[in-house]
Length: 413
Ligand SMILES: *Cc1c(COP(=O)(O)O)cnc(C)c1O
Image (cartoon, rainbow, N blue to C red):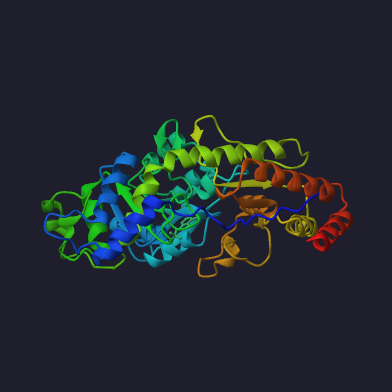
């Protein structure tokens, strides 16, 4: 098999419109969001208006990162020091990190083999822990049954905050991810669905919550210059009791995000074409399990996950090595040590150790791959063929043959 030579970390270049918008901000010298001419709406405020409209939310705050949005959402929602926060046992490190930053204590909820929150475990732990908050991570873009989740949240009296880093643009039965609870948190970091290097967006329909979040983000007393903010009187009640935890977005990043937002829906279609090409290429491999995607879920296929549940740790290592030798970079969540972006609940030693047998079983055989839009559909078919070949070999017990294939491909490079 011919090795794949594309880069799994190469996103598309920013287009001329974004570059022109960035140049205009640079030429103005007014990069700070509150550094505006009289009557001028800053790019950060424009972005807040545009994103609120896209999301169908009343309010929006642009801030420094997705992780920052999560942390101030918890604070603005009233989390007290030492309080329990329910969250997914399988998520990215900034999620338990945001709970820690806000002074909370993560209580980890199991995931299912389809990589979503286990709602039975959620109901159990909501009772047992007396937690008031659920920080739901729609990890890798998979949505739980959101109607049932909302019901559990209601019954247990939980406040729901959604981590939508991988579900910007996704929906459940036509309702946008991020609109099921008090707040939605989004990331505009390079590897998500909009790219400003770093950046975050927080949406909500709750006026007092958003006023607190805006002050927390470092608005000083300039909150009236925000683009999608509640009325002045809401701020007057809370402005002096809310600390300034500086984490604003600047006009340069907002300027390059605006034209990208206008193209987001088109890009979602392009991601999903790539996802489906991969899915098709992997569907026939016996022993390889793709997560079930329910009919109600409109997802954004910016990454793909699959499991090889029959493979032990040596087999998984051999499989990753064989794919890598043919140019396909996979992340494996069963590795004993965290690598690059991959870590598991066992590596977060600042969190109380928790018994999560279901999650551990799923992660032991779970693989993940990004799908940047720089890949063509042919690239996706090629990658799928490589994964299928390596999986068949390793699953057939031909660890030696897979490694041999790897070595040969290594020479061919
Ligand atoms: C990237 C990511 C975040 C945090 O976003 P940053 O903007 O990098 O802080 C949170 N949750 C998940 C699941 C992510 O992938």
